[in-house]
Amino acid sequence: MHRSQAELIFNLYKQIDPNSLCLKLAHLLQFSPAVEAQTSVSKMHLTKTILGSSLENT
Image: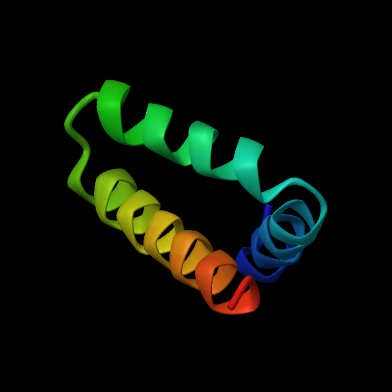
């Protein structure tokens, strides 16, 4: 899968079901096999999703 495809899927998931997306990203952070790249990307996406959701709700 290419990065652009992954970003498209992420953005669709974020629009359709942001709560489940946050839960899945949090799960990745908690149970990641200490692969720093996965952890940093998950943190970034989780932060964007949470901040984006809170900004949309204000």
